[in-house]
Length: 125
Image (cartoon, rainbow, N blue to C red; front, side):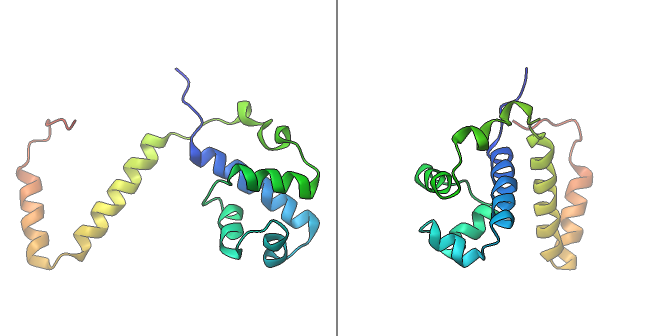
């Protein structure tokens, strides 16, 4: 079964295309944001792929640059969704390691001892 396209995939696609437009029209971030009636921070987050635009913002971008919705989303069927489970596991492992490293040495020793004695076959739900 094919996975659905994630928000991350959409953010990456949108960000890549918006960056292309931004460079093509040679406007500063402040000027482009002002043209779209956005805060600098909002526009920056769109450029960096941290947010998806609101529909109104997307319509304003289309009007400003003479685009259609197809221009943005015509490639969706070509996107191969990332394996979100692998990414989530890496983030979780990083968070756990980061938390572990914040513990003092005695607490780290106790945690390691507990983990060594914990059954490896146990399944989480």
